[in-house]
Length: 343
Image (cartoon, rainbow, N blue to C red; front, side, top):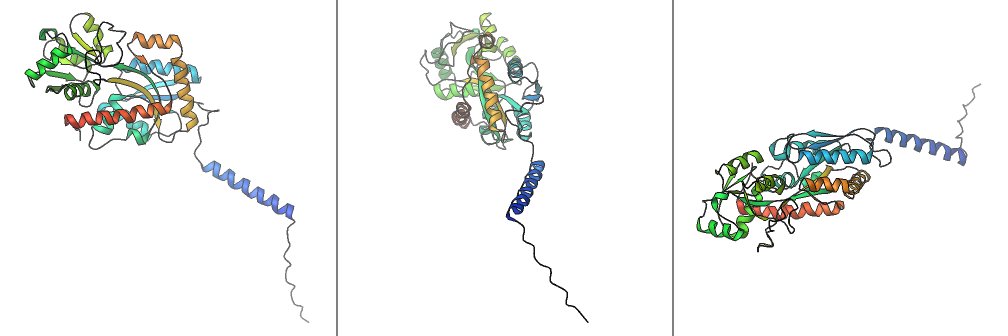
């Protein structure tokens, strides 16, 4: 006699058991996802290891002392080592591009300035990176105004005299720079555009080379930062005509501004600031911005900046973004006027 096998009965789990199993499954899934996700840099745990501050210039340059001052201040504020790493090459593009490729975890920051960031967008046909898209501005630190200096042998004592001479002698004046797209170069092109004059641009590979030929009377003028030029002006080896800023420089208080002598739009300076790779957590960006601004509120740090000819800045991240955007627009017009391009 055969017996038909009984059909297994479906056992219905109690509602409370279903909720327990569902919660356990969700918790397991979340744990797996968290394990697979890259570690986030949170403000309450960051920084837990040393921070690299990439300086896209060789040691000993004009930006080096400021970068190391900033690293020291950040280290004190963040209670973590901040190590300056020099990455020179291609007008700052080598070091900057390395930061763009770095993990966006807050442990790689970029110390940069006008002459490195702005030309990357305006001067290069094949852009190595886009500072407006590939980097997150954190905050401005300080700036140095450019200054117009001439060889004393020219017997020129004012900006009006320089303009008159340049108009009477087109392309007879040579102005030196630290390379195409540098602050020295674009300041000279801005003067040409503003004054309606024609001069020859002579690029060099360092400020020292420019000043050597200026003092040696192989160049007639230049548009350097006031910090680099001030010692030679004070020694009488160069003649300063005007500071390209709204206010006079504490380093050369007797030199008038371009606005004072009738050129209100002839303004040029080099600002310095901190940036991070795109995607860096906002809480990290805000923490570094606060550390910069806190340092700039101390008289000790501000006095150090002033002694080196820097004008303290600071401010919000949004203000730094606007500064970059405005300068790319302004200097982009100057680059187009000059016809300069680097492939």
